[in-house]
Amino acid sequence: MRNALKKVGYEKVDGPAIFEGYLGIKNFTAQGIFKEMRYTREDLRGNMWLKICKFNKDGSIPNVTDYMQAPWNLKLKAEM
Image (tube, rainbow, N blue to C red; front, top):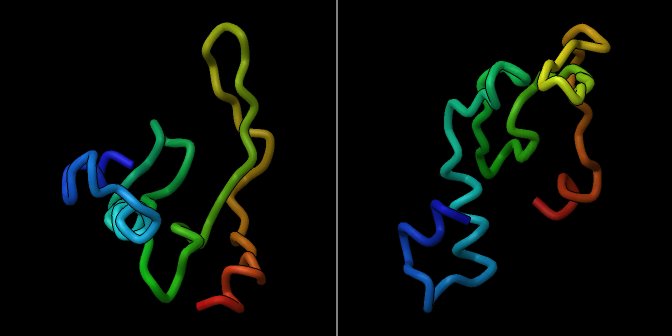
C-alpha cells in the first residue's frame, strides 16, 4: 500500500496500483523471519523458502520448522 501511495497518491489508489506496489517489494526480510523477499510478475510467492515461527508474548520469535520450499498458490499461478 505504501508503494502504491508513493507512486500514484491517495486519490488514485486502485487495485492495479496496489498490485504494482506489491511487485515493488524487494529485499524484505521481516526481521529475519523470511529470507529476502521480492515479488515479480512471474513468481508471486515472494520467496522460494519459508519457515514456520511462533510469536511469543515476550516478543521472542522461535522457529518451529527449518526453511522449506514455498508451495505455489495454484489459483494465482493459473491467473498469471
